Image 1 (cartoon, one colour):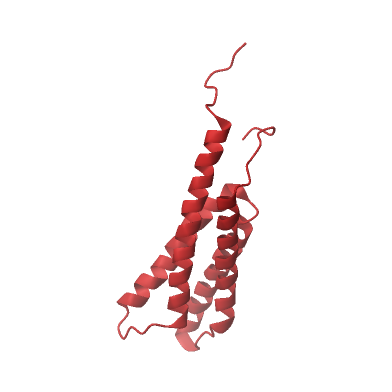
Image 2 (cartoon, rainbow, N blue to C red; image 1 turned 30 degrees about the horizontal axis):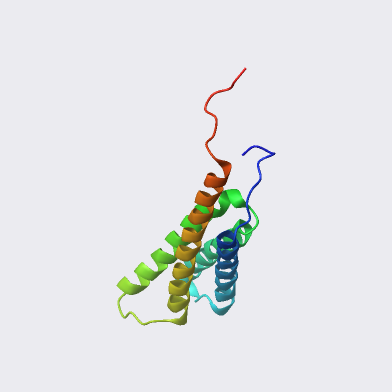
Length: 136
């Protein structure tokens, strides 16, 4: 983007940033409730918590950094969808509060994605057609 290009701050983008922040903070809060088991399962569970903390930090960072919003949103969706799929396919499936929070997070992330794409389209219309060649 050219340094003199004006970037619009639209309502859909503000709502999307708010949703990203909410899902990021919600993801961080769920880590405090999760206590890892002992034994052989400890290392994989700690690794999973570490990755969840990275996703949560990336979501909070995406509120401020426009360039990483869509990739972070895609990574967070993939992570949450994976958890939900594994939970549903696990033997002895039982709906847990963490599963419900991830389903809410998925809905919020999908909404944020739609709003961000809408804001990008509006920005593209605002910018108009780009020049394809340099004029002397």
